[in-house]
Image (tube, rainbow, N blue to C red):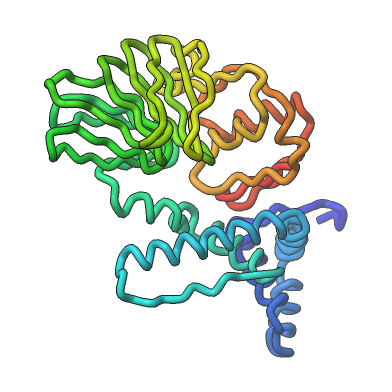
Length: 329
C-alpha cells in the first residue's frame, strides 16, 4: 500500500482511539504508554483513528466541558428526584478530562447518556424519542402530536384538564367536554378557548402558535392574559410575554408532516431543531456561524442531509464521530 494512502478506521478503532486519548490525558503509567505504543503501531488505521481523535480534542474541549458540566448537574437532579433523602454527589468535571469523559460517554452510549432527558421523562406520561413524531390520544379523546424528543405529563383531576410540556413541543387538538383544558409550560400556561395549537419550550420560556380557534396565554400567574386567534403566535419567558404577532402557522407547524421551514432564521435555531431529530449530539462551535441566516424547507427525517446541504451553501466544516457526535465550525 502506498504510504501516502490514508486508511479509514472502523467505528471500534475510533472508539479505541478516544479511549486512549482520555487515558493519556489522565496521568498514564509507563505501562499504559508502552501498551499504547504497541496499539498505535499494530495497524495503520490506529494511527489515523488517533489523529482524528486529536483533531476532535482540539475542536471540542470548550463545548464538551460545558456539556459535561450540564450533564453532571442534570444527573444530580435526577438522583435527587429518584431519592430525595439520598445525598449523592456528582463530581463536576473540568479541564481536558471533562472533554474526554463527555466525548467517551456520548460516543459509547449514544443517546443513553442523557440525564436531562432522564429527568424530564421521570415525571412524564408520554414521550417521543429523538427523530420520532408521535400522536397520542388522551382520556378525553383530545389528541397531542409530540414533536421529536418531547415529553408531556397529564393530570385530569380537580375539574380541569392539565398537560405540562416537560421537553420539546406538542400540537394539541382539544375535544370539548365542558372542563377547562390548560397547557402548562415553564411558568406560563395556555388556556384553550376552542382551538388547535402548539406549545413549544424555548431556552428561557415557551412559544404558543395557534392554527385554529382561540387560546388565552399568560406568561406567569400574575400576568395579564393575551388572546390568540388563528395564525397568531406569542413567546413568553421570565414572567413577561412578547407582543403577539401574525405567522404562517401551517408552515411553522409542518414538522407534523416531516418538514422544517425557515425564513431568515439563525443557523443556531436550525441546529437546535435538528438536535431533536438526531440520535446523539450536535455541537455548534462558532457564535458568529450560529448568527448566520437560513431560509429553506428541509426534510426532518435526515438531519445529516440537512447539515450537508447547508454546509454546501454556508461553507462551514463538519466533523463526525461514530454517528453520535457532529461538530460544526
